[in-house]
Length: 299
Image (cartoon, rainbow, N blue to C red; front, side, top):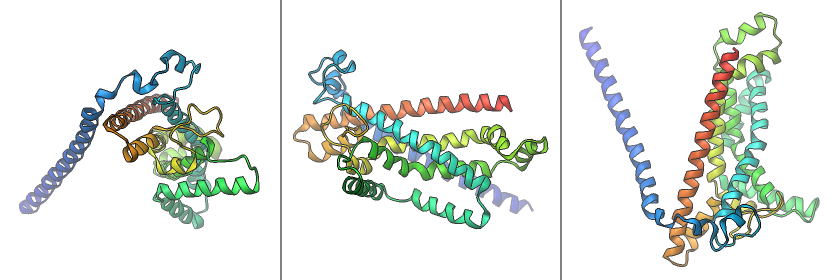
């Protein structure tokens, strides 16, 4: 018995050490990448990078366009994220609730497998689908439909839907049986049980999926380069306009820069995109903590 206990203890220590080594390697790699971007791009971070020759106040008030700065790309990125999440979250939550609470077991496995496959679909395939959809709508429904902000947002929403759906489904299905049966035992209907007990109890896990979707919308390039993003477009006047976005700008500059100064602007764009994503994640986590505490308090 003593030997078995020692072997088990040694195995636990080896596994723990291996986990620590992997974590340190991962964190180190991330810090190296971020440090490299900071070293390369911090010199280019100034108002000229954002607004070029345009007065910052005039640009912020939309009085004058910005042609050679990143301000339109920043606005385009934020609009793209907001539109994509606005489309994806309601549909994803509804589908996840259906799979977890209403879908018959005979076909649930099929839909679960389907959404797992969709989650692994390369983004370039989704971009080609959005581009093909644009051509179809242009030829058969409305000749003024071209690649635009709306098509990009819909394509990105389709890209992140599987994450939200499966996160919602798993979060609801893994709730303890006692939590599931308490409200029905007191006379609540199934719909009341879902909205007043099950969703508040699983809100933390569901919001994790939404946060992941926000990050995917902010960084994806393959989808938007085929469905509406261009190098120079200014701030989009409507959802049917072309737009600029930071991921596409970074790709464009890194592949076609004319001199070292343009490459430095690309590094600066990387830092700005990283800053935007970090703040979006912080805001999302703050909202998540607030909602989780409020809903648990109601319970």
